[in-house]
Image (tube, rainbow, N blue to C red; front, side, top):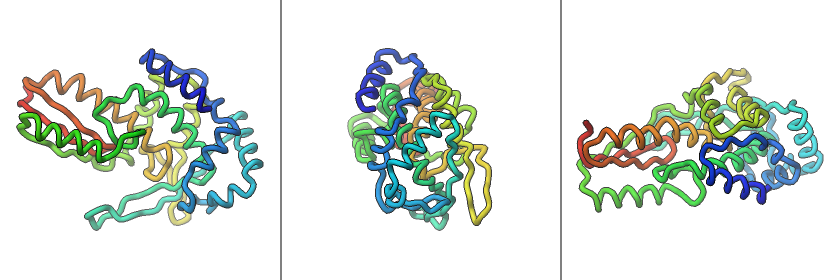
Length: 262
């Protein structure tokens, strides 16, 4: 898989408009075993309670069955388990969706594919959940702009409830700008529409990509790349009489303006 991903990255970089038509075959036995091994140990389990360690007891058999269902297009993720964690510096709680371990494996594989393609598209202003980038890098560039540029004002933006309100239709349309493999798109769509379980009851997910899923960060970055980063770069900056910049970490961003917009 790694060699093929390198080739995909080269193609994505050479042609920003290229659509990839054959990707799901990369989710083969060898690749999925590697994804299983790369997932962290002793993490919260999904609705069936299967841990990484338990799944690994019959790893070869489980992965072969998973690959078979992926090939026959019968693979369907189970609903995620809804749980809540305290928000930082707040009395409120943040909802998380914990996938079943097998679904984490598939999400991990798809995340690798999407990262390979979209790392060539994402703008330099984006820092969250990207390879070789972190919050410290975002703060470093932010400090550079504040200290080295004639900044008039800084705006701190947090998109309220972003992960719970991602529009599925637009999400899929954005993905189709780069991905033309209907089988891979089908699986991603099933993750988005998989629903969640809370107190023994299943709920539909008509919007959102639940925090807690392995695939959620890359989907969030793809969505915000089109609706925020490109919008700021192509619309906002052109309307400003001076200069304007943005630093984004996931759904938190800090637009910095050096002159008033027209």
